[in-house]
Image (cartoon, rainbow, N blue to C red; front, side, top):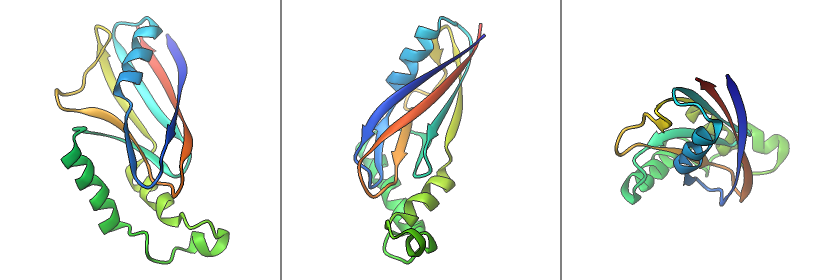
Length: 138
């Protein structure tokens, strides 16, 4: 069986990192399957998904890493073409990726003790984000 659902959340932009683990867990339980996988996909080209330990030190380290490898204060061809100043956010999102697949067993995500699923919004302004889930199992 496959169940498709959606989570909507508001973000602040500028490398806002949001723990969506509880939302994913709730949708897995709601799907009524005990074992399977959930594919998580963020719709949009300026946000991505990953897993981290959701604590202030790691959050600061992750945000700092993005500024070092894809800085905001350089010229991007996207900005020259569209003038919206978020070329860096597109590049960052492409490096992180738009989807994850996580197994679940007995209605519980099989993540590590200190591992959470996070959405990272790289855009230069607040956004409403759609996260699509496809839950497959039995």
